[in-house]
Every structure is written in C-alpha cells, then in structure tokens.
Image (cartoon, rainbow, N blue to C red; front, side, top):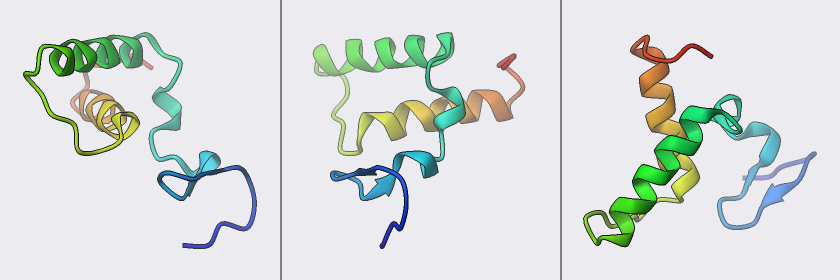
Length: 71
C-alpha cells in the first residue's frame, strides 16, 4: 500500500490520518479499554497478535455502534 501524504506508521503501513479508529483516541473509553487489555495481557489472560491500537479501537467502535458511548 502506498501512502502519498501524512505520516506513516512503519509497523502497520497505514497513515496516521487514515487510522480507522482515530475518533476514539484521547477519549476516556479508549483509556479504559486500553487499561483492561493491558491488565489481561499482564496476567497472561490474553495474547495479542494484533497491534493494540486496533484492538482498542475496534472495541470502542463496537461499543459506539451498540449505543453505549456518548462521544
């Protein structure tokens, strides 16, 4: 994938402007979901094979789509 403008995350090759969950970053729900995942990973209850930002973002989006969030 070729990105013509914006910064590119070398690990995922996706521009930061095109990050699909950008609207959830810097929100309280993002921080909470991030902490929950971190706790699970620290306790070896969860093994992450996907970049954490995408896991957190996807969960935030699911909560938003389900009408749980007030963003």
